Length: 300
Ligand code: PMP
Image (cartoon, rainbow, N blue to C red):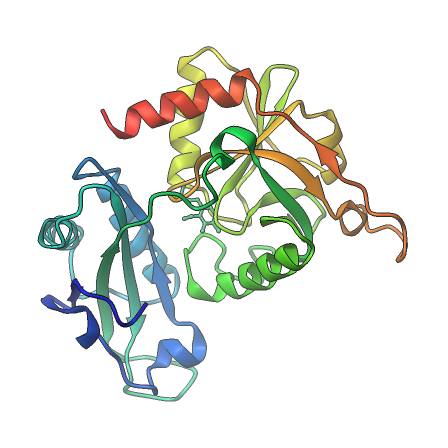
């Protein structure tokens, strides 16, 4: 990724892609003192830009880090960056981090930095995945409780769990991981929120120990506008069996149907060696309605 053509916005300047480099003794590299965003551009328009920028600033604040740019300044930088890179459809990646003034774990007085990169990213999964759905694997890694991690921040530290879970899922032959929380309730995938369709209603976990996605909130609003009842609640993993449809939502994933969920022995904390079960789902009417409505909205 470091050797591409293009322009990156770095601390207020537009620099050549290959020149956007940092020192190895950057605090963020050692202690995960960084936060980031993922934003999509549709038809040269940036979807929900200010919400993402506000979340970046709020994530940094959760880590005690004040950014040296305002939300309007960062919004302008993102818009100009997309234009300079000639972006019609693509992805923006703002990232903020603590600099290299100290190797102490505590970081008072360290400088805060912000960069924004932009690249083409048409689909996360293979062509056809939006119709057929993807396979998930319930991970043995769990989302920590809010007392143990800054769970409201989109912080790099939390993604260490995501990387482990995703690698484990792929090694098991699935496309993404489904993570439970410390209580054994359903949470989300590695980069997207989770919805179940139960008796025609939309059920989604309460985001009290994982990211309350911007797409999640948009899809909840769309569902209500279609008269679909939305229920936010704690959902034990066993309730997957009563779902007729399952899908994920996220900036990158958009509305992504799920066709199977495996690895359910971890989920039920059953005895080692117990046969792993896999549940199958078919993207149905509710998923399709919301996927179509979301696809229309992002280009409206
Ligand atoms: N959870 C995680 C862990 C994520 O990385 C993302 C992607 N940002 C989401 C949920 C979905 O959030 P959003 O809809 O704001 O992209």
